[in-house]
Amino acid sequence: MEVRFYENAEDSLLKFAVIVARSDGKWVFCRHRERSTYELPGGHREPGEAILDTAKRELEEETGALDFDIRPVCVYSVTGKTRVNETGEETFGMLYSAQIRVFAHELHHEMEEILLSERLPDDWTYPLIQPLLLAEYERRMGRQGMEVCEEMADAAPHTPLSEMTLEQLWELFPIVLSAHQSCWADWYEEERQRLISILPDVAVKIHHIGSTAIAGIWAKPIVDILVEIPEGASMEAAEEALVKGGYLCMSRQENRASFNRGYTEKGFAKQVFHVHVRRAGDHAELYFRDYMNAHPALAKEYEQRKLSLWKKYEHDRDAYTEAKSAFVKEYTARAREEYGDI
Picture 1 (cartoon, helix red, strand yellow):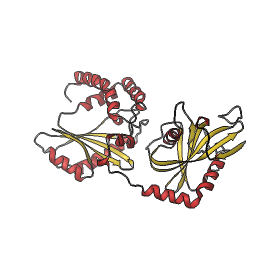
Picture 2: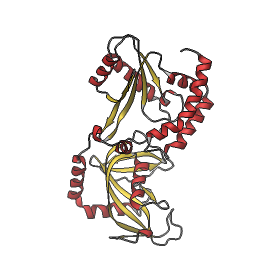
Picture 3: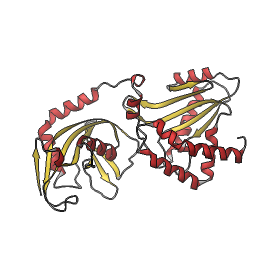
Picture 4: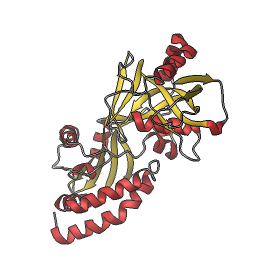
């Protein structure tokens, strides 16, 4: 096995991207669900894909990176038979460096674990290749250069959310789906108690809605909460209390308002909530939630629909929601017929 390094190469030769990634001063390694060994993030270039886009995609998929800086280091080549090169001919790839600031809540591809460590792993998936790539990265960057890059990444200015375009917001907060997590019910209960302590002393009703409230299906790891304000109580007072309590108003219309908590200039926080404030009785989401929980086969059908739309509309939340709307409306109407007033 022979590994070589070049300053550049014909773009058509570049078939792989490997990323030496760091976060908070630590190396970032990943472990495949079918292996016990660790590796640098990276993978094959897809047809028609720019090599930089390959690097970004692989970094996002294999580490869950949401907010990061990435730049090329050099071209590398490997000569010799490997699990991805049966002929043993010289194959080329691009080596990148990345500083990761924000990670997603969950991993959604073949990687099962992300390791952040100050030392290198003992068990490498590609022991004859990737340690050499990392050594070349260190040689070219130098320890001082690595520290400077990390300091620059940490100090990089972030545009306030209120000043971002819709496209920037969708890029920073993509559609991300996760297998159902039991902790979502706990998040809801903790947030419900928080809301009770914040909202004016009126007889509000608080409900867990959305896909995180439907048993066993994949969902965005964002807990949706419906708050019903009784007639005669002040909507404005409730909205002001939520803003003072740290929630950000996303939209407002007559007798309806939406708030969030957990969106930052660096991406999603560990826990994210959408709070929907309505007048009492404006609760169509309860019908859909209860109908899905009563009909697991339909819930799985809904899950498959969501999964099929995920990557297509990853950075277009409006289109993602619209593409599901016919299914949601149909079964909300069926639930109303079956359940009557709830």
